[in-house]
Structures are given as structure tokens and as C-alpha cells.
Length: 347
Image (cartoon, rainbow, N blue to C red; front, top):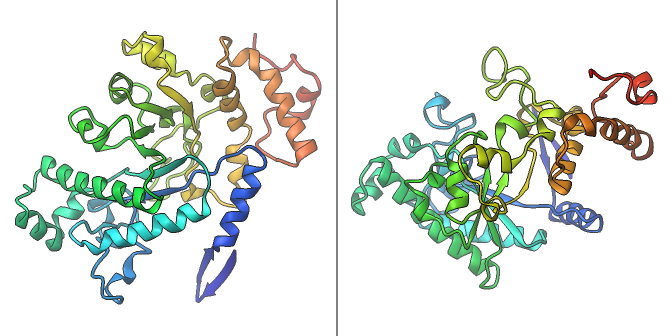
């Protein structure tokens, strides 16, 4: 990539060649790079050029303030679903991404849509009035689904008439009363709600495959100082490797009355999430490792034993990765304890 310095701003960009290099590097090592085009929310900056090109506003509420009213976190921005030119742009973006990313899956986002953004944008409300869409929760869901249907069609067109395994986040649309908008034969749901949320059992009962990323276990950015206020961030406390290791979807489903193993199998995997509001080149590795090693054993092996039995393996493996692969995550124990396995434990 290249670093461009403009006044006090530093902008990092990656070329198509850079992206393809990363994908190839991962492919030959058995790692899949999964692309995501988040939409229709989290879509402000990067779409402002539409008016200059005669396409109208592609996004609304861009950088709008006070941000708390129009998005979950700054900077704000959502796609302008009243602008038909938006779909040509989305199709072009899909085509560019499909050219760079291999693999059988594609993530289309879908999280944190803010209805107040659309409800306070005249172009959107005029469009809804013209099409007799009420400005209610149900009406905004209808508007959102209109985007979802057309975006899926544009993806299929960009991909030569075929879909991939289409992944989206849990959201308002995956709540029980709106889940009928989604087809379980098309969509896999990445589940970021808490392990006790009612969406989890409902999703598997309705036939959806699920990827676990429940924030109360698997958000690696939790437990640090807030970046939009005081105190700690919203998903605190810190998720230690022991808690991550004990992330067992079968247990969470059974606790909500789902005891059928055929429904447990709808959980097809898990992903720990490190959001980068407070992570970068200098601290990302220590936030990811060794906690990601714990999740890997849980989802590859599905052990019947708990974290206590796994601790010697994890401590040793973390040491091996540091010394042989130069992957420096957080230290788990003093070096003496690493060299004296089994002693530094509470019995």
C-alpha cells in the first residue's frame, strides 16, 4: 500500500495488487480471507463523490452530528435507498471485490442500521411517501428489505449468475418478527449478540446456519478504555482466554431449550472479532494472541474438558509461536512458569 500525508491526516490505501497478494498468501496456507461490504449502514465516507459524477447522493447522514442520533458510532453514514443509481455502484463494487477475493463465501454486512437517519432525511421520506411506505418500524424494515433484495440480485449478476454463501450480521432483520425477510437457504448469520439472546435459538430453529461471534465471549476489543467517553468501553470486561475457550454453542442452545443435536449442528463455526477503533499495527497481535489459539482448539476439536486441562498446551504453544514463528502475543505467565509446567496453577 501507500501512505499519503495530507496536512495532519495520514491515509492508508491498498491497491488491487496488494489485496490479491494477501489473498494468495492466505490461500497457500489454508486460510480463507473473507471480504465484507457492510451495507446499508456504515456506508458514509467513500460514497460522497456521487453528486459530482451526476449520480446524486449515494449516502445520507454522512458525518452528521450529533452522531448519537444517526449512527452507533462516528462517523455516520447510510446508503441512500431512494437513489436508484446506488445499485449500479454497489454492483460495480461487488464486481471489483469478486475479482480480488477467492473463496465460496461473501459477507454483506447488515448491522447497526439507524432508522432515525432515514427518517430525518427528506429524500428518503419523500421516496417512502411516494411508494406508500409508512414511516414506522415496519415501514423502515420494508425499505431495508427492498435494498436487501436488489443488492442480492446485483451480487448474483456481478458473480456470473451465481450466489456464494452469503453471510450477514445479526440485526433488526434477524429478530423473530422480521426474519421472514431472509431465506435460510441463502444466508448464513454471523451472531454477535450475547449468548443468552433469544435470537440464537430462533435462528437455528428456523434453519439458518450460524457463525458464533457473541460479544460476551468473543469480542477481543472489550475491557479497554472507552474512546467516545469515560470509563471502559461498552462490551467490558476483558474476555480472558479461559472464557473464550469455554465458548460452547451447544451449552448456550441447551440453556435456552434447544437440545436436538441436529439443531446444534447449525452452528457451523466461530470467529473472534477484533474491531479496530483501538487496535492497529502496534497492539493488534497482543490483543489477538494467544486468545485466538484458545478459540481455535474449541472450534476445531470441540473438547469435552475445560480450560484447566488446556492450560499447559496453550502456554507451551504460545511459547513455541513466539520462539519459532516470531508471533508475539500477550504473555500468559512468567517465563519460570512456562519452563515449570504444572506448577503455577490453582488447584
